[in-house]
Image 1 (tube, rainbow, N blue to C red):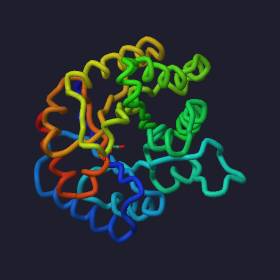
Image 2 (image 1 turned 90 degrees about the vertical axis):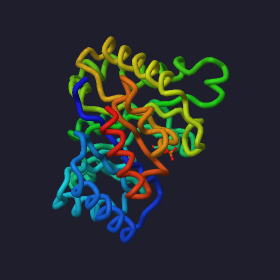
Image 3 (image 1 turned 60 degrees about the vertical axis):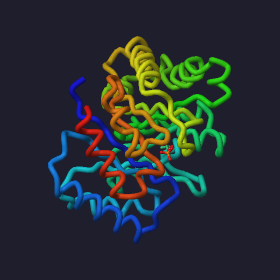
Length: 261
Ligand code: 13P
């Protein structure tokens, strides 16, 4: 596929306003100073920094898209502490991370809620970065694909596909993030990731039939392993947590990863 590879920074619950500003100005300076191989860059700051980051990105010398880390599925109402798609659109978000394993596990988000979020995101004209991944137990029981397939099938319902809201699926991102690889320094072999990515592509091509999204890998991505991942076919990009918190490291991941593609 000839789409430029995608590098997404998920800052999680890190970086206040000052830290976001200084991080971003460093990252933009790095990106503006060198000629990068074609690449798509997305930053997902915490909610409180979205406006500040959006303002900076609007006048940045390089193109970086804005993503939110979460959203509520209702358009508005009595949902204390929640944020709607309309609020995210107003602030300049283009993408929303949905179904991250930290939300599934720590905040008990289930497939039904994730599906509702996906519908809300598409209705608002935003694009999902949909995360799926198996746990260590799934893996040890040889049930990796069964878990991923279940997560995908529950969001791609027949009704959702028939609604036309999935017609843009080729502009979405699916992030394959094995739970056991997140923040642990442990990673699967790139060839094994590629095999899973091919299965994801095939499932979406079969069920939705409107092209395939970029399939990203996430889990302990670093300067040391980015080249091995990105030179592997069917890995269209990465979703980076810890290593995205240093602008220099994230920039190195983009620069090395983009030229490895
Ligand atoms: P780490 O890169 O810190 O393992 O986190 C991955 C992740 O959860 C990105 O969403």
